[in-house]
Image 1 (cartoon, helix red, strand yellow):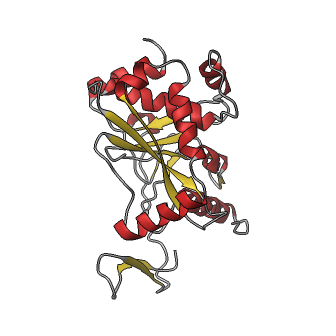
Image 2: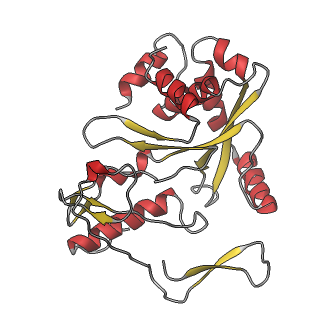
Length: 267
């Protein structure tokens, strides 16, 4: 946050940070209305005592870990402190009838969302559906690289229990040193994340501990994007203490209705 994002003087298609000590723009507002009266809110203090804090940033400068650190430091500032740098039941049910080993909650939730979205969008059986997800390879290469899981719609819907989970697991396990190097080279060459037709990006922020931040005004109750781009799904923790998750995505109303029913296992 030491400057501004500007186009590179050497290459206009690339960005760089101009360290001009410009700091962060902060905008505050106050209203006598209650939080429950609003469908979408910005940075506002409400008559009921609730406070909505909205941040806007460019993904070129901040990834999920950086957002977590920024919010932790912002919370510390409001408290006057020094700066700092339950999904389990769902998982047990998904693994009940399959024999996969070393399965994480990410595999199960990602696979469930992938399958539910595919069915809700009523894609043709022979369509190749691809889910992209960032993998933190910074221990080896100081970079995030794109992993992926891919299958036809028919395979996702009709295959045996655990097939979709195994596809996600394979997407993680293929990230050896050669894959990571190839992924970094691809990103450098194409200046972006691969995006195929009938694909979407899935980003999990469950382990960033965003919900644990405590501001001077109290404990954070909800962290969520105001808008989500089409083709992007963001996974966030639910309200503190309930063990749930929030799935943020953009679908037409009829598809969203079907997606929710599948996720809640009503059909």
